[in-house]
Length: 96
Image (cartoon, rainbow, N blue to C red; front, side, top):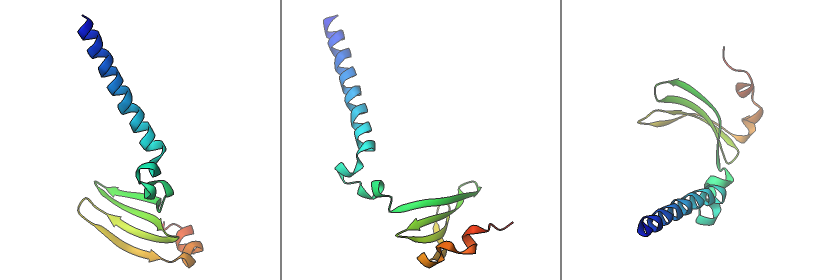
């Protein structure tokens, strides 16, 4: 009975440790070197699902907007917009 209680407490301690480590990694990614995740070097501005696993994404990388097509097999750059095109009517007026 004592061995079962000790084993249960050890299991609880291990699960608590795993939970705390998971929380710490999500809360402080730069501590373990996931700085790109934290600083948001790539931002998804908009996403449009085309069905199945196909999507069109508008992303921003280093201040530049890029329109990409994403499938389960491939990623294709459809349109690269420079930083000057940020206020472009292309981004303001959706196609009907």
